[in-house]
Length: 258
Image 1 (cartoon, rainbow, N blue to C red):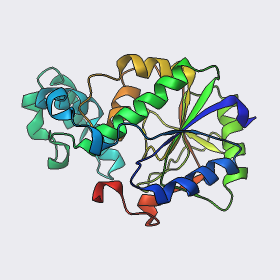
Image 2 (tube, helix red, strand yellow; image 1 turned 60 degrees about the vertical axis):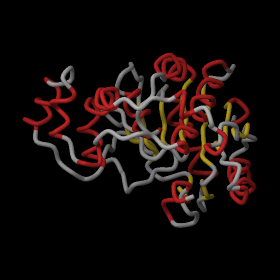
Image 3 (spheres, rainbow, N blue to C red; image 1 turned 90 degrees about the vertical axis):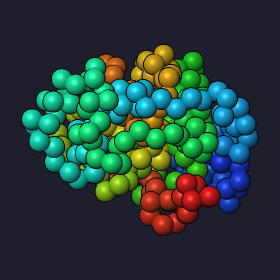
């Protein structure tokens, strides 16, 4: 079954201690991924000339998904505020004052640009590949005691539902209350969790590639924006996390600290 999935492992070369473990985690479910180690932030010398921070672009991208980001952060949003943000979508500078500080525009770091480019490459390969689905994992995933069984059950149900996006590693304490299915939860509006490990349909990958640029947000927010800008045929989260997000669980130190 798993031979019919393209798989990619996002890897930061300097964190070589993670690679062997991450490969063994994916081998447990029958996958031998392509390691994506190009575009390390240390080598992106052209970023200073090729990337221009745009406050306006950041706001245009973040405002449509602000209610989802607030909900994911455990904050409720006043329906009146949501309506105002919707009405001010074409006046982002005016809307900025209504956003919390952590959503305010900022320049992306070289590390964030690196991760964006690596995910873009992997998504492009899925879009151009021969298989219906592709899996993208980051190098801080850790094996769960039931990874093989839970992955098989979750993947099978997801395929039967003909879904487009499936989060497999969870994170940020985000869970769904949807009880429609045994192993997956339908998420509406579409939302990511941490991008530690997720599955994409070839159909969705093609749509994402066509809209990926310009970029302004970190990868998790950027994918969230894209999922809410295109027609997604079913966004799901695994009910039982098939893998553990190592950076969030404390197994690994986050690359952002390097």
